[in-house]
Image (cartoon, rainbow, N blue to C red; front, top):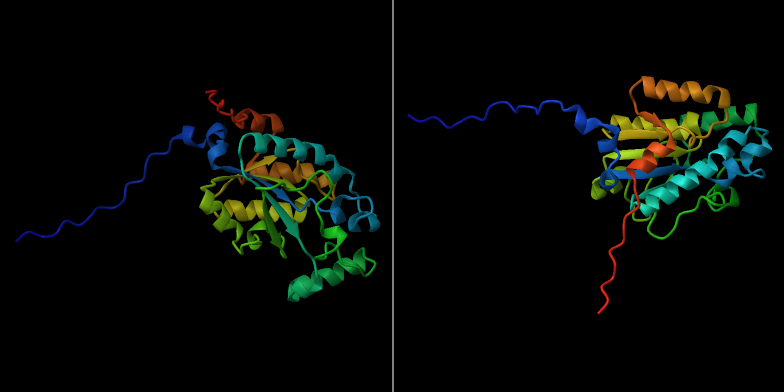
Length: 242
């Protein structure tokens, strides 16, 4: 009597360090640039944070670095994803409402930052999406909780494009940026963080936070030039003259 063949256990491929080098991870065809919450209320001298006398100078210092990375990504045909966070009370529940109350007790004037439809929620000058870029709107800290205009969440957007690596930039380090970084890692994306492209309300703690990310093996913290080296401009094919 011939018994049917039973497939054996799946044999995992041996680990090859070359497949996990920064050069391999940052290949343009499977990378995306994520720009987190570069909005007026966080960055503009007339915005919410500035009105509360929160330090914004370090966050503003990230602007030219992020602008440079956006230009590099565009020239390399790397998708650019802009997130826009809203803090409207109508979007908040339980713990988030309590946080809003505690925040107001500590810092506030009774107002709410980045309310939908307001100037404060708009993208800061010089950091604005262009046609073809992706905008993800969110009501929580993580970009993975947001959706695009078609109602697709970030994971669906990334899967559709075959994205494996996220280069994450923006503000604010201790909330939306770090939450997005950790969520990306937990969902099996490679994470690369450009050292000068993340802004914080607490500049003294920022370096320790970045060091922890790297030492905790959550992501690679790199200089911009390393990313630029791996994202060369796409050469246009010359049009044939007849």
